[in-house]
Every structure is written in structure tokens, then in C-alpha cells.
Length: 141
Image (cartoon, rainbow, N blue to C red; front, side, top):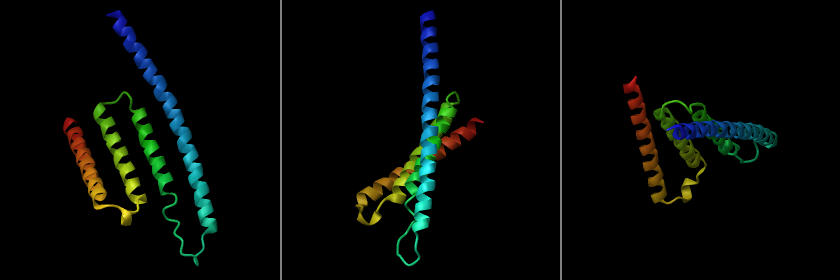
């Protein structure tokens, strides 16, 4: 019995240490991505010309979504001791953000309808799952 208690305590401490290390790495990643986004924005704006038919709209979008996804992952680390329902909701939000990023940067003209249909079903399923999780959380209150 004492051995099981000791093992649980060691595992719990190890989880906290790993969460702290991963949180620091994510913070470093987000800082780097923000600096990279600022630099990219500066380069694009300083080279922009109205005479050229060049769009600067989508160049920073992947970086922006990387930052959002990393911050959502960090949010799951912050709530390590909270209920599992909240964690699952955050993971579903991360998935929705990642799929949105893919859709925004995807070239739809050259995509097959099977792929677009599959992505549509995935988005509907994730949204329905998030709705049900929200409904469950609100009914528990």
C-alpha cells in the first residue's frame, strides 16, 4: 500500500516537472514566433507596392495560427489539476484551430472533392463535440 502511494507521488511530481519544462519550451516557441511574425510583417510592409499585384494577406497567417495553437496547448498545461471536461474542450479547440489554419492556407482550386468533403465532416464533428461538451459542462454547474 505504501509502495503504491510512493509511486503515485513520484509520478505526480514527474508530471509537474514535465509540464513546467514543456510550458517553458512553449513560451520560448511563442516568443520566437511572435518575433518572427513582427519581422515578417515589417519585411512585407516595407516591400509592398500598390503597383504590383502581390498580396501580403496570407504570408503571416500560418505563424499567427501557430501562436494561437501553442497558447491553447499552454492553457491545457495551466489547468493540469482541473477537471477532464475542461481539458477535452481545450483540445477540441486546438483541433478546430489547426483545421482552420489548414483551410485558410489550403489551395482549394486544386483539391479533390473527397478531401473537401472529409474536412467539412471533420469540422462539423468537432463543432458538435464542442457543443456537447459545453452543454455537459453547463448542466453540471
